[in-house]
Length: 330
Image (cartoon, rainbow, N blue to C red; front, side, top):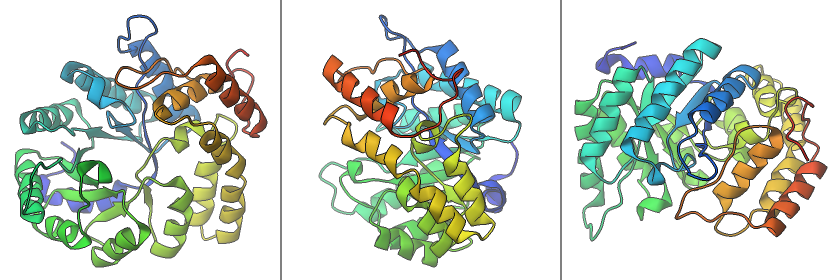
């Protein structure tokens, strides 16, 4: 362990910074097995060429819901290994989210043993629940007692409710190793939580489009996170990293200009995303970038030929700088 449970907040406040990304998990065509070689290739590109500061492994973007516990553990082990060997500075936050608490705790213990820096745990889906606040508080309190790692909470509408800023602040005050939250909520809610917990809880949200405003207006230093840093950037075109550095250095005008220049890339992805297939679209976009994408697993839907054609046309026109060695064959 790099820190003690009671020191987790101070450790995270000092080190949990920069542009992090939610990693998709590659599966092999045909047998749909976890593509270990493809995973390693992507990790080396993300840590080396893109200089990602941290990686969110095994989340919803990574299709954890269709992976076995053994596959989830292997993905974390490889990510920790590649972060150390490729970057030496990139951090790993391992998703332990699951409806089964035993699985959550098993994954958290494994992440700690494997050398992950933090864990992230999604707020549970609650069926017929009446006292949501007390239930969720006890949930995170119990997990905090069982792991020594810093915990990032995650509140998202998928749970069937949103954790209130007051609940988040209470958990942060009373659970010493709750260090951050991925707060997928309206801006008014995360704005309020940021003000309530400054210096005790790192608040972030998944929207890349809102990231720069949150750096400039709220003083945020952590993007936690979604997939844009992995698919809006290439080895020679790292505009998210670059505009973030400008903002951290105080150059708001320069950062905004660079941020706005990515609008054609954002539009290309949004305008060609078929209903029900965001994972498949993003994985195909990865392949166009020269990364390892691969198929999705059920219950997710695959793309058809017409959908791929539209995505390819938008990709070619979006202005993303793709070096020849990185680009996939036409």
